[in-house]
Image (cartoon, rainbow, N blue to C red; front, side):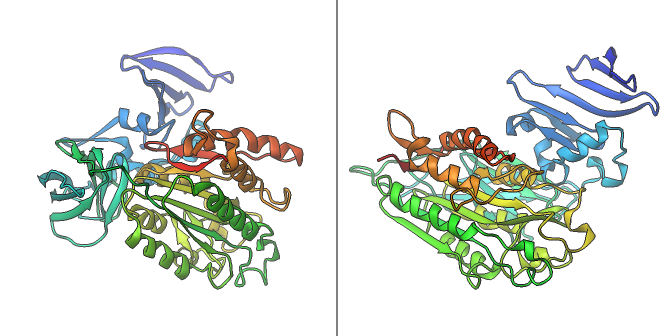
Length: 465
């Protein structure tokens, strides 16, 4: 039963409440429902169109809303990859039909997950996990293993319904969860382990882990610049070097070792070298370590998804996703970094004005940069800080650096430190950058703000001296 609440100021929309607590907005001319708005007791909220496209305030909001398909129920987060589309929700509210963009009811279902074996953690943190997948109709895609809300393993291969994983976890309690995708990777099932794992603490004093960082700055794009000179960046390399130096200077007191891989030359910042560097780190980073990824480059929307532009890329929608690093590849690479302590910094321009190729390169049907970062962070449990909103360019030229990186470095240098401990963690750093960046931009007569996602516990990165 619906209860009319009121009309929009132009009298074109009817707003009605229901017994389920949702507020529904209807277009009076077409008698079509445009969206449902739901606020939850925990303060989170979500907006959903009749087709299933949604915008949410947080991960918690997505966990609060279920979707029933047949005899199975799923959190709406299961459909995040294709249906978290705030831009489409806005267009629906303006009266546009979204029928051409798809419907959540047509998605082929992801597998059901059963835990077969979950061994206790050994004295050195080893855990054996065995699961069984049951095809839900959409086949088998990647499988992810979460440790305390952060992915530590992604299995991309195989059609076997039975999977076994040898995990290594740090000392302490661990809530494990497994997520499995259908073959098209546009729906994910998730299931929590039946019990918590507690890894014993080793004898003697705890030893600090290591900090590993991959930092890339791309100024030059040789395959783009001859026809589009504006593609060249002025400060990306300087920003990457400053970020790397700041980590080395400020992180040493917290870690047994600070290992920074800095890529700034044109022949180092192509897709192959960045992917190889991440794959190398997958092999050496352990559960007690911390991982930082920083990229200063262009970010574009290609084929409806977000792409980090590497130095080798060309500005063509048909090729750029394979030549550069798209969101799915980046997600897979970061997922297989085997630690829960991950921090990602993306200082990427909204580059529609700087790189223009095929007309569909900047598709409004897909995710914008801010939304793509939110999906990536929420999918695998990352602490992420991004340079600009979807409609802003990441401004360059403040004391020889981009505004975003300048603010991040100020925070790492101590401005974002906790008063008692002097430690700078991802949570405090995000708050500092979000407050400082708009003020820095105003000094240049510009507008810019940061966006962030903090999933899991804050990650310590530096200490004030």
